[in-house]
Length: 383
Image (cartoon, rainbow, N blue to C red; front, side, top):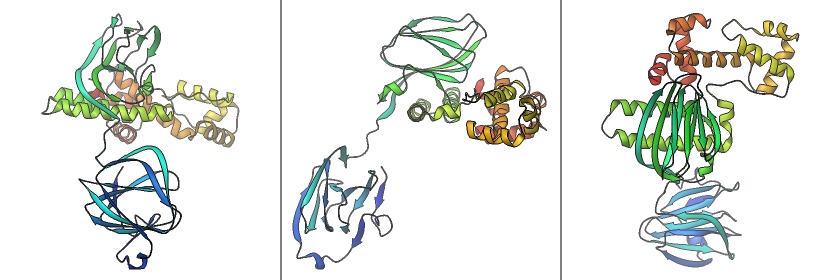
C-alpha cells in the first residue's frame, strides 16, 4: 500500500488539510497519545471531524467508498468529511493528536489488521536449493520422490508425464508445474520426443498454495521472461546471482498466482493459441487457420472455405474469439515460429521464408513486438 501525502488533491475525497483550529474549539476534544502500532477497527463520525497532529508523525488509514484502503502520512491538521472511516496510528514510537468532534464516535471492526510497522510479504521465495536445466532422451524416466520444499518444473521441449499423489498430468511444451512440499511425484517422457526442462527447488512463504499445486499452468509471456532471466543468471554466475534468482522466483510465484486466480492465463497461452468456441463455423474456421498457417490466409479466402460472407465471418469471429481474424492469424503464425525455433532445424531466414514473411527483419520486428525479445534471443534462451 503506497504512502501518500495529504494535500488538497490527494485527500479531496476524504477531507482537506487546514491550518486554523479556532472555528472548532467549541467541539468536543479528545487527546490521544498512541504508541500501539496496530489496529483492527476503523472509526467514523456522522459529522465533520478534525484531527490535529501535535507531536510525532502518524499514519492515517482511510477507506474509500468502494471499500479500498489508502494510507496517508499524517503530520498536519486535517478535517474529515462525515462518515469517512479512518484509523490513526503512530509511525515511529509515539504519535499525539487531538480529535475534534460534535457527534458520537462509531467503531467498525474489520478483518484487516492495520500496521504501521511496515509491510510483510505474503508471497516470497526465501531459500534456493537447486537450479537445474536438463536435456533427456525420449526414454526419460524418474522413479519419483517427495521432499519438504517446493519444486518447480518448466518444459521447454517435449512433453512430460507427471504423476502426483496418484494423479497423472501431461505437462506440455510451454507449460509449468509446482510440486508442493511432501507431494510424491514421478516424471517420465511421453516417449515421442526428447525433453528439455528446467527444475528449481526452493522454500518460501506462499499463501493460497492451491493456486499453484495440482495443476498444469501455461507460462504466459510474463512468466517466460522471468524464466529467461533465471536461466541467464544461472549461466552468468554473476555476483549475488542466487539472490537475483530468488527475487525472480518471487516474481514468478506472484505472476503465476495472479494468472491462476483470475484465469486470465487461458486467454494468453503462448504456445497453444487454439481455442474452443461454441460455434461450428468458428471452430471450423480455427481449424482451417491452424492447418494452413504457413500459407497466405485472407478473410475472403477463409470465407470461401466456409461458404460464408466475409463480413458475417469477420463479425462472428470477433464476437466468439474476442479478436479479429487477422490478429488471430498473426499470433498463431508467431506461435508456429516459436515452435520452429524450438525444433532447432531451421535458421531464422529459413523460418521467415517457410512462414511467408516478407523478410527475416520483418519477422524479427513482429516477434519482438509480441514477445519482447528477438528470435535470436529466444533461441539462445532455449539453449
